[in-house]
Length: 260
Image 1: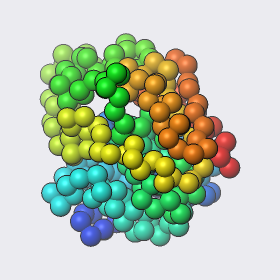
Image 2: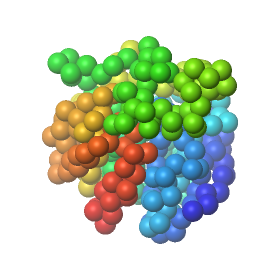
Image 3: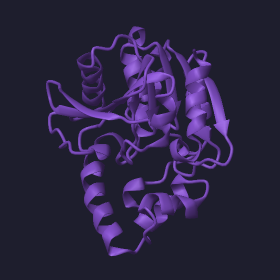
Image 4: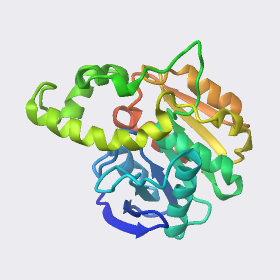
């Protein structure tokens, strides 16, 4: 599947996005790790849907947007993107930080989302099960938190280079500095912006997907999301970590199809 790279202008930014596939419109919101046209989950979703995958500010070739200060700003910006795409009541699929934004969008405008798939979303906090501070982790520590198989995950992160390879470290640190600047507004010091008080407003049919080996946001959070959203269904995936989008992308495509 070949995705076209396009862009649209919103009130606050020029937003690049990927578009591909045919069928009912689906908006995919990526996590703090970013987005590429080669992400396997996009190709699978595009087999049955017209997929729109916008880059969040600070990701891809975009710049951070100072005017976007908090969760509400990013939520409304994301709705501006949907409006700019000319979409009405699309399917929303969000992973990690993107899942947090998708849940906020569905809570703020419950009648404007047809279906909702949340893949290991951030946004909740339990004192008895704290989420690791991803902003303090060194590159070599990330695979252990993100993947069921850390060695395979490290190869995916580095494109075959070693974690201490200067080229990988330079690219990672530069890219990470830009991306984490935006992500920090939503996730630092803890990824809690009051979403738990708004989840009751979600009326879209919802499936939550969680990797059972997720060591970044433990699976107990999946049950918390399920219990807070009326009628939501939780799908727990064996042998998958936080990056279930890379390790088990078919699970996300199946979750979307189960809501048809």
